[in-house]
Length: 118
Length: 108
Image (cartoon, rainbow over all chains, first blue to last red; front, side, top):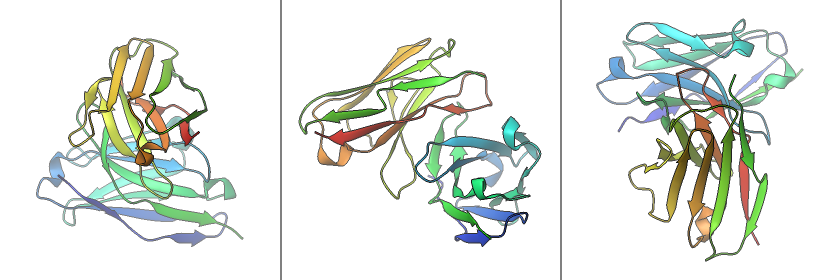
C-alpha cells in the first residue's frame, strides 16, 4: 500500500504563503489521486481539494477556490498544496491522503502543522 | 451542499459495552459513506467504506449500516483503544467531500 510522508511544520506570517508537500512511495504515482484535508485546533475535518496527477486535474472546495493550488510532480512522486494570503484562521494541521476510486480516503499522511502568527 | 450531522457530539460508554454512533445526511447519498477514527495527535484512519464494508485490518467489533440518509457505526464490546473521535464522510457524486462534525467517544 502507498505510504504518504509530508513535509515538516511551518510558521508563517499573515499575508504570506505556504507550500506543503506529500511524497508517495510506490511505483504507481500516475494512478494515485491525492486529497487534502485540514483540521483547525480542536475542530473537525475539512476537505480542501483533490488532484489527479495523471490528468493534472484538480477540484477545490468553494471556500478555498481563490487561495489554494494543488500540484503534483510525477518525477518525484510528490503532491503539493499551496495556500496564499495566509491569515490566523489558517492555523491548522494539513493532511494529504490517497483518494480511493470510490471516494474514501486511505491512507493518510502524518499531517503538517501550519501556524500563522505575526 | 449536502450536510452530514453526527450525533451525539459526545458519547460516554463503559469498556465492554456497545457504542452506537449516528450520521444523518441532508439528502440521500445512497451507500456512499465512510467512517474514520481519529486518536489524539494522529491522522484519521479509515474504518468503513460503502457504509458497511470494513477496511482490511479493522476488527470485526466495528460495523457500519444504513443507506440513503441514515447511517450507524456500531462498536460492540468497547476496548480501551476505541476511545477516540469518529467522523463520517460522504463521497456520493464526487466533490465536495463532506465530513460530519465528529462524535467523541469517551470512557464512562
